[in-house]
Image (cartoon, rainbow, N blue to C red; front, side, top):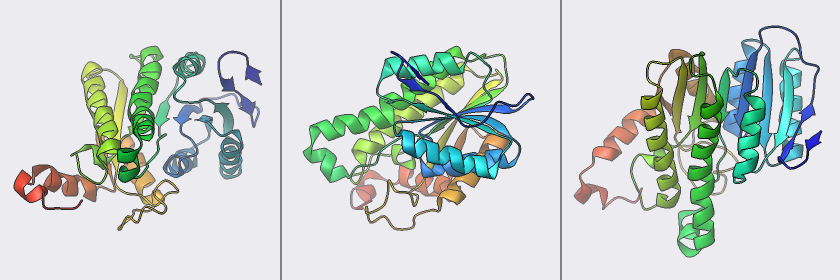
Length: 264
């Protein structure tokens, strides 16, 4: 049922079960990576899952898929525009009224760099969606979560934020913002049970990368497995697949005279 004025739409898809189910919130739940992460999480036990995104029909589809895979789980959809700060704050206040176990922030866009260079409005939206809105969504939830209770907030960044490159520096700068934010948040929460994890996927075969001509795309299932395992181990920064940690280490340390000759 819609709640006037808060931008949130609730669609219960199953009756809530009594028990110690994990409560999971996923912002950007229609993301293919997010869907595969959710599938692995609910495979370990039923959960009370809250799916957040802009497209009600696609969210309902994700909910139906999870219901088939885990009939004991419950799913609720929330239609929210991540650029609507008031709606995000209202959502966080609503969902943190009961303790959360996992929050995954996975929304984003990936336009062509050349398009961003020629369209300032597109560049601005790219920065807002992939940088500002991610940071503000994480802050809205963390500010309201019990810092003395064990829980994990997982934030999807990108290897693109590790070094500015001619092929994606607008998108990459947004992800660099996210990386710096999460690093500071981890410092702020150091020693507390509430953990924040940064995920840096490499190029992945999703609808967002379709048509961009990227070589060596990872499978979303592979990326999801790296995320789930990293969260279980308590890894503060997860490269997915793990090989990207080595690749980006090399790229970050290339001398400028060498780096400037490369079209990467």
